[in-house]
Length: 78
Image (cartoon, rainbow, N blue to C red; front, side, top):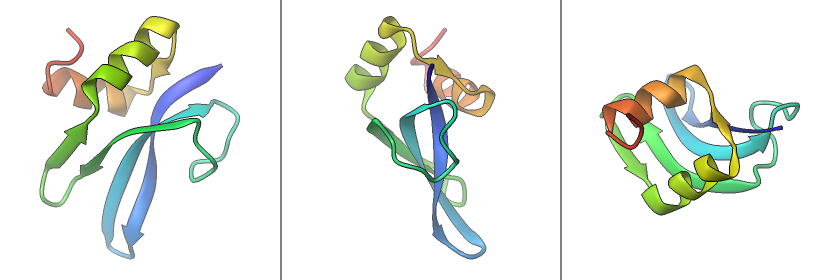
């Protein structure tokens, strides 16, 4: 089952996250199927590829709870 979730990048004490499509059994920083955006919690900067996200959601990908909250805040999901 594919999931839409975050993978951590950045340095120690300076996290940044990529929004990725992954198999649900893959480890957190494993190989993604597709990269659909990024999120920086320190600067609150977000960059989502809206068309790709909407396509994957139509296909049946389930977002994690954190990703769901981010997409809802960005008004991509209602």
